[in-house]
Image 1 (cartoon, helix red, strand yellow):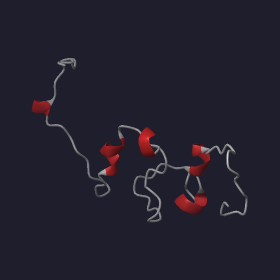
Image 2: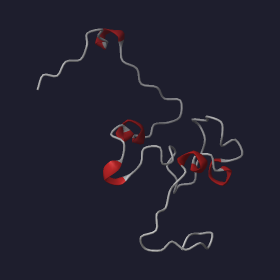
Image 3: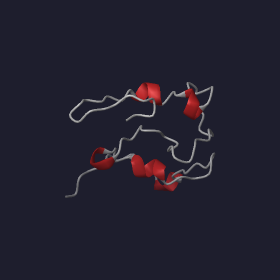
Image 4: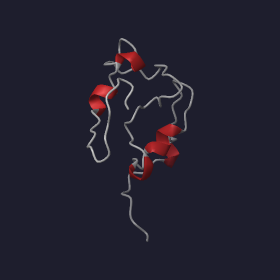
Length: 91
């Protein structure tokens, strides 16, 4: 049973509207449509919502953001570490 009282039966297809859930004002506040990297979310909600999926099918980039840092912290590659050469596969 869902929180709103609706029942989901075995074998029933359930779709999640990610656009709608990421703009839920009851979770993200009245400015849910606005980008706000400093927004606080309830402890049970990841700050990035379901943008990266989950389980075996989660986005491989999720570890880049799941290492939560204080708001406003920016990592930058030093100019001496940058390269204009294309990446090549050495395998």
